[in-house]
Amino acid sequence: MASGAVLELRATGRRVPDDVAVVGFDDSIVARHVDPPLTSVRQPMEEMGRVMADLLLDEIAGRAGRREVVLPTRLVVRDSA
Image (cartoon, rainbow, N blue to C red; front, top):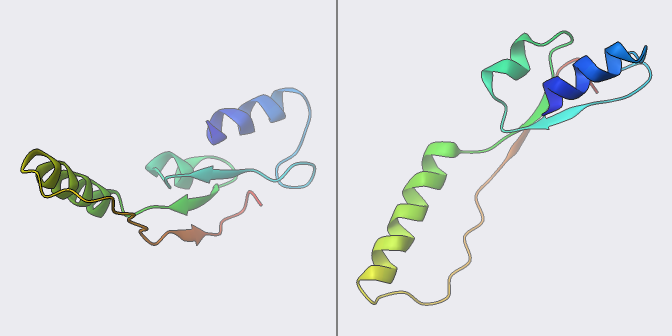
């Protein structure tokens, strides 16, 4: 989405980051190769999958209580913001 936003902004004559700052989410490989490289929020995708699988297995086994899981994220600053 953020890389598409950069393309649309450029098509309308806007400059990133001079006119508009753009920040993405998930820090995909695309974020590193867009011009300018996108600032992005990185999430621990593998750990998210593991935690969700554990929660699901607990639910299936009847061991589920209401749990809140907060995993760390990190802002990766590049040239788009």
